[in-house]
Image (cartoon, rainbow, N blue to C red; front, side, top):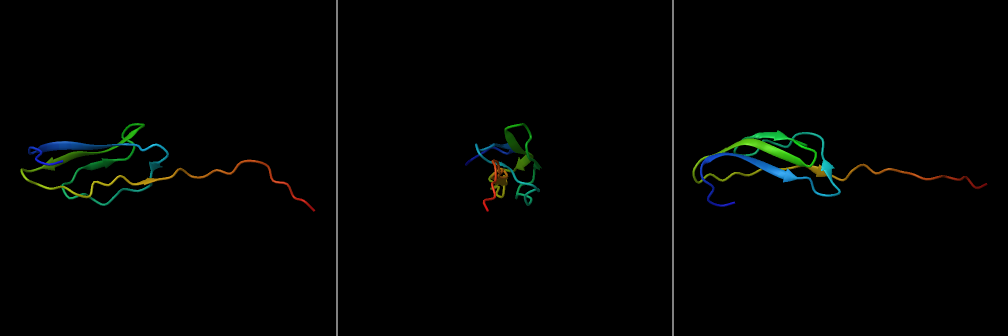
Length: 79
């Protein structure tokens, strides 16, 4: 986003279909903020991101992974 006025912002990610939040906390982004994985059932956020006039902010990462695989069914041993 370009030309945001100075202020305090929240950056929100809507959970992509087929993905889950990865464990751990990402490295601190350039303009600060507090990371909350799964802030709600479908979103993660960085809150209290404070931008000055003309400031660029980078590193707002939302780590994701595929859900763990499951194995199901029946196994037969042929002899």
